[in-house]
Image (cartoon, rainbow, N blue to C red; front, side, top):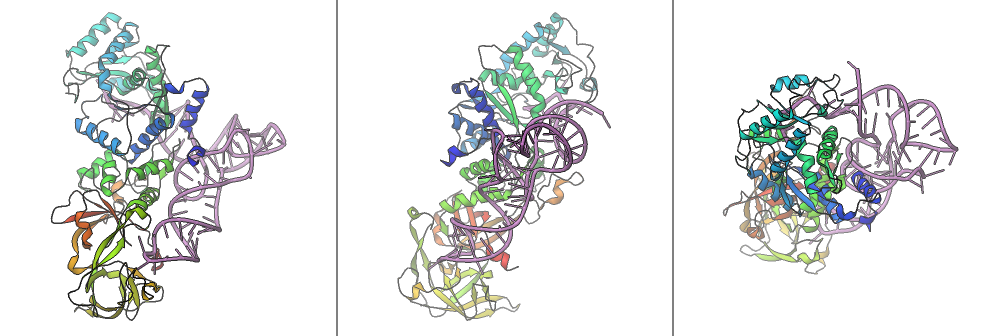
Length: 559
RNA sequence: UGACCCAUGGUGUAAUGGUAGCACUCCGGUUUUUGGUACCGUCAGUCAAGGUUCGAGUCCUUGUGGGUCAACCA
């Protein structure tokens, strides 16, 4: 159907070509390779959806591989969080693997390279090594230690491994070409000494392999057919291939690295460093703050896995720099929640309505459908009584014809209830309306089938019975930045664009059915937006996060 | 003063060398007991100049613009 007609992205085209050229489909294998040094964000979701999506499309296994070669930055906490996020997004990996599982194999291969004269131990300072690297436009120069004997290199490398040297004193380098046009090929470092405890291998090792030496070999060990990474690794590809070729056995599959453009999002930042800054400086309240573009933040905000997957699909992938419009992400969550979120009524900025001709002590439990988009969703009862809250901005003493809401002398429909007419209002000393006195039409009850209940009135308002209202706290989130591309200004710091009003907390009243809501339950507060129960909720008060407001056609006209 | 990558409406993404399409946004309208949803519609694009070709968004050349590459990070 539509899925089958969908055009292929460039990665899929590469795979299709490989298949045509004879790669058996059963050899297809992918991997998602995060470093466990932080939390996943919506950019990672692009990679996750791409790799696991390919797995689904081709019936191929996808590994979750932690690229854990730098014990200084990595922690078990991140491993757990990443697994949780990938699972939450709805994907199943074939195996969970760790680059650290391959440390011994990597070491053995390094010894082999030394024996073949393709690697050497350098004992210069990192500054000296950097100097000799040259620049993109000037060639590098050979290290004075480049031509040590195999025996000496071997002995030194074993000593490195045995902890005989201090951090920074020795490294193992691949002997490639200091004049190479690609700087990554100028005798890249394969191993450095790091006397740190690794979250998995403990103190077994004090030398750790670098990314380039590890990544391609890990792909090869796992027989990953297509190793997909982001564009900034393009220039690493020569090295990736060189390393793989040193150990490549022609009876096995030779993995292939391909690169796609990072997915950026408008009105936010995505780099780990900047996100960390937001957390550490208290601009947000943690990595899972609902304003963060992290998976955990989006989850807490009320996003669904499906919405994020749909967003990834809709945004697509390519090789050019891009900034996806956050409006697309918002469209995806509204689209999903419109079909699935139960409708309820809550009043965020209340003003009291008194139905003067309604019996004093009476309460009626009225029927309300849970979701007009889903017949299976059924209905619930909501209490109606003499005193109600409505939204303050739904009343004006006088207004023009465009204002469909409550105004003196005019009627509106109370959703799922009666038609009321505003007769008068009471104001306080400041002239602020504190009570609106209305009359209701007793025959107009929704669903009663009477002629009066069928009457068409232009406006329909949401409301909550004062006596039955559940007091809730509501966190209204807005975009964290006021600038579409906060990163995109060379002369300005991204923090200059922070939106000071990205969070507003209000006390609100909700219908009593919300008493049974539990953490992460999502609702549509009718006419307002989608909201989700925050983990900060207590037995005495529930906290709701606004995921996204509903489209507001009136707000535009009213300007 | 190098190498490599990229360039399609405001945004994102398509188009065996053969009618530039789709989605989001914006704007307008229809329906509506949510000014929501749904539906319909409008505006809007191949970076430039040459070349190859019956025919170029696509191939070639040059230019322009953007990006990447010099961590004992990944």
